[in-house]
Image 1 (cartoon, rainbow, N blue to C red):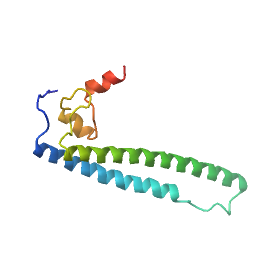
Image 2: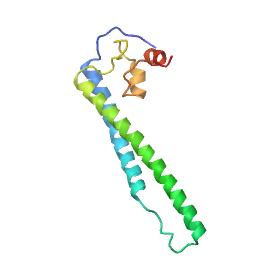
Image 3: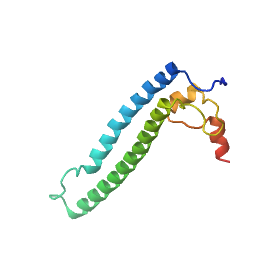
Image 4: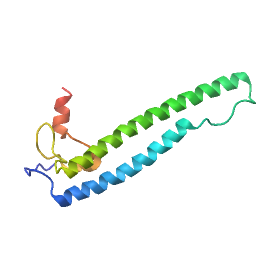
Length: 127
């Protein structure tokens, strides 16, 4: 990977990252709607089925709702991180590692656009 000594990314590069982030935000917002709707959906009525099947069905629905709620929560956190990245773009601090102060490589930011740590800083923080 190429390391750079620039202070920050250019305005053109920041616009490129903004475009990537806005696309990911749109996808995440659609996804969270799906999960929230699934959490609120009561599904098929089990009133006419046997009591044993009804208990199993209700347990399965509860588990599915929990999983959907967890996914919605994770997406909500992801959305907040992406929104914070947009603020960093506005402040022209986007892509600067908060530990080392060096630019995070473009390849990393393209795959993890809300990253605030370079790979080295992230690996060192886990030690």
